Amino acid sequence: MSHLPTLLVVFAHPDDEAFPTGGVMAHYAKLGYKVYLACATRGEAGQLKDPSLGENLDMAAVRTKELELSCAALGVEAPIFLGWHDSGRNERLRRDDPKALHNASLFEVEQTIREVIERVQPTVMITFDPHGGYGHPDHLVIHRAATAAFYSTGHLPSPPRRLFYSAWTIERMIQMQQSQQRDSIVGGLEPTLYGVHPNTLALTVDVSAYVPQKMAAARAHRSQFAQLTSDAVPPERRAQMEQMFSKEFFSLGGTRGAIPNWPLGDLFEGL
Image (cartoon, rainbow, N blue to C red):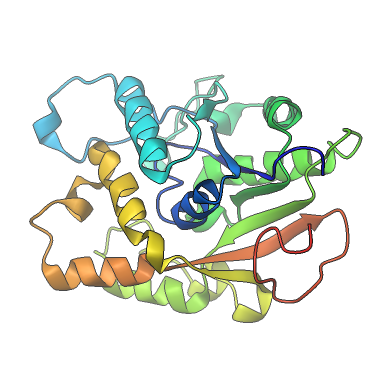
């Protein structure tokens, strides 16, 4: 290909990148690939999890800065914001905000992603799996819009060659449920619905060498993850988190060309 290998990760909110894809983002950035994160919103509807940050904060501004720090910790390019609003979820779902991602036209969201694809010319894309990780309405919108954008950019001179979905295995879902509080984002979810069997995975990546960068990215999102990354976290809990951070899982969402092996050994294998 005429341009440097480029990875584009498309997610909905600041902090979506830290846990499921932070390792591969840091890995390919270290190899010299261009790694971009397109974030649909600035996390306006996020709940403040660290009261020490103050009161009446501009959450969009806070979380924008946090994502910039996270990207710096991972060694990737500065984030690209798509201009939509965080929808919240459950009882906080923002039904009346026309710019909330949940209320947006899928075709308009797709167009904002197409524009990024045209600009950065990714070789490979990553976005949410079809269940949006844990069913967040904004994640589901971005899954659909990013998938559509992958398929509708085949006419470009250098279209993206592969699309991957960030996935959790059934085993990892169960592990997360056992290790977190009852009110966690995965609490009560059916593992065989939201997780995937290993035979569905196109790629499993050992990112244990990049756990420090992932932890730094998570710490950057202080307003959201303070309770997970503070010094008060018991050593055994921290060790368990680091163990879960050490592998990242991907299923295949689309390809323009043959897949040389199954499962793949690398996002870019054969390209």
